[in-house]
Image (cartoon, rainbow, N blue to C red; front, side):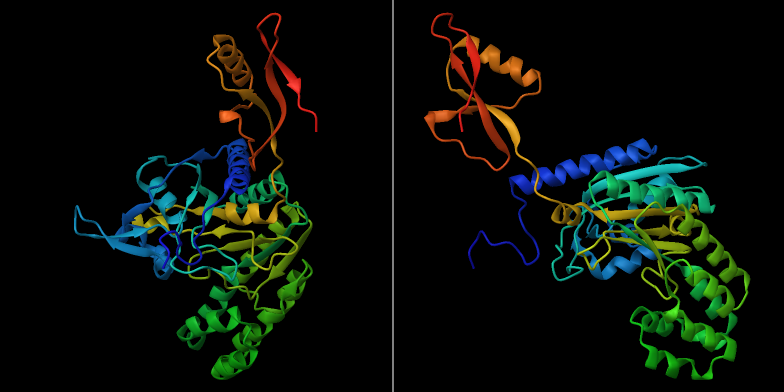
Length: 386
């Protein structure tokens, strides 16, 4: 095997794409900052006991593991940063009220999440701790949508779901509770024949409600249908009210409701959302409420947030425009060095033309050059004719 080949689903990022990703990262973090979110940088490595604590164990199969040569303990390379940020809130910020934290950095997966996915996403996200009210979910939802707009994405569709609906239904019936994991799998794959067979011995009301869930998908009018179809118990009523409120708060192209969506069911504790754009089958951003994550770190805190993959954003956006630059010949003339420093200090890009070679680049387009005035000896800008 050639020694320059990389592992499958791992790739170098070349100049033009790398600059586009960096520009997106900056715009994302600027948007987070405008909402008052503070930037943190969790470590790439942690002891496995900490990294997979509590609901973090959902990412165990995605986590690369290795042995720390200093301590002999097993360590993991982060496959997600949400649990790390929850640990930071629980132990390091030492604040009792609302805390807003954001992050951006590489994560690593043992397997790609899709056919065109990388095993090294560049994850960015925002997490809000300390507020259990639906207004916190509304803020995070608004931030996710405004961030996607800030980077230039159009036609965003928001899909809303709620863990509380299925949890309330399985809690109504001991038979359903005993088969919760199977119900989760069948609803996730919309396996109606399997669902009919599994619910055969359930209580009639529970069976009817569970079989209705896959059809409770569509626009906001689905919520009215759900109110007449599902049992009027507290957990379901609360979930439907929250979904109705959040749907009304969404500033996007379209809002859909999917009451059978169980993505993240074991991780989330309330509302869940996913943002989609035309031409991409997978969600461009995901988020929701995950109260209880911090409990594993000894400090239970309400929490809600979202994350996205900057690499995926870059793939969906047009190529970055080349930056205008100035070409300069290499010379020991102090006047040239001074002129170059002045131009760079004013924000211009100046590229020395070493060995009088033709300079080609994916990032810059040289439309001017520095030439020396023969009469004064000063260096002046000249337009390069096309």
